Length: 539
Ligand code: G6Q
Image 1 (cartoon, rainbow, N blue to C red):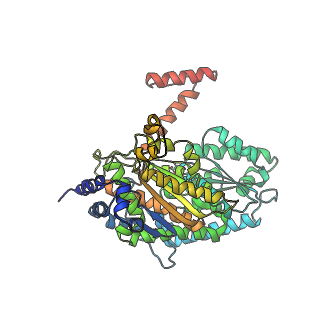
Image 2 (image 1 turned 135 degrees about the vertical axis):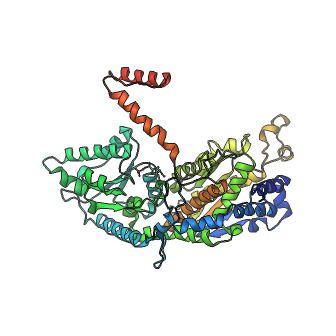
Image 3 (image 1 turned 60 degrees about the horizontal axis):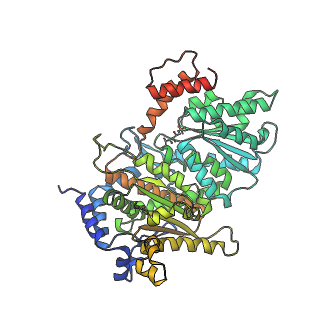
């Protein structure tokens, strides 16, 4: 069988032939030809180093990687997360087809998915309408989500993104870090009798989350004196978890627990009960629209031909740059303040999924795996790191994300914002030649500094407006892009063994930080750091 990667070599041969500017010059229809639409998003990928031949070769790479079958395996509940022996069914969480059945181990998971959503909806309604009250009878005004990683980044990102839909009389906080400052500053901002804590943890054993949750419980019980602690906990704490035993042990009535399942990976769990804080913020109707957006993109990904398939196209372009051109990173640049946390969310989704060093046979990979994802809201980045993207020596493909309408029209600010977005992609693609500089009268000694090479690739993603549906679709777009790259790279995208070692070592280190007589056994550097810390805190 021919090596599928020969297709990437072919794509590279085509890609190197012409610059982006030359490609535009030879094809007046290029912009149209290299654009696709799906689930409320328009992707213009014409400012990439590809022609039709290159795209054809890249699509062949996807085909010869067995992508079509892999997509079906994921959607139909096969245990494609082999190292954890789990199905990967975040798509079932937002399957809006009322007749859909999705089986895991012979059991249809959809009735449980729908039942949980209905329970979340009831609970969200009660909090929003004031039917659910704190122990003293006061309305809930503050909601604090305690969780980390996949139980934090999604809720944080989406709550900010959908602020225009949020009930403004409720305030939302997210505590993730085991740094006590995070909890302490949050508790300073809330009133105990009016606060609902959502302890969001799939396992309910995560050190950071459980430490913060216990501290929050202690704080609350201490501030409502004379009250039976169990009553305080039952009115002010709910749980989102798969672990009913641990939830009970914590003192939360499992009637106030919202479940999910082992086939939902942490970083893919936002559309599960992990989205409870979001549902409370925006209400069940908007939450349903949010899920619908995901679903629309899911359906597009599952059914569209690869050459018209938005997640597949983005994945293939990413492979071209990382494995073809050796680009180590890509940049995500939302030109919408509400999407300020989207790059951070994407970082976990992409890097925890595809930051792997062995293939599906457990052999060291021979190609670069997942790229480094980073980014900031657009115009802020322009005044910071864009210099390197325009004129530096690294190739940084960029995804520009913009919304045609703003929720907050003030004068011409939105026109200016969008003008900046479009202009950046133009500058990156076409640059500025030495001749153009000279024609503008740039002094000869400054010409090298004022020249822009151009030929720097970008994708532009545009939607009409950032509404719940378009946010859901955007998240699903990147999820499926990451999935596609994992399939092509032949790695497992849904485990995360790389986070284990540090977690385990931290337990031994903690024991040595606190013990009267540390057990030791560390390397010289770690032992020195432990000793220094102990001395500083007087142990
Ligand atoms: C994500 C990871 C990880 C996880 C956190 C929190 O895919 O699994 O980020 O979400 O470690 O785990 P818990 O939800 O179990 O507390």
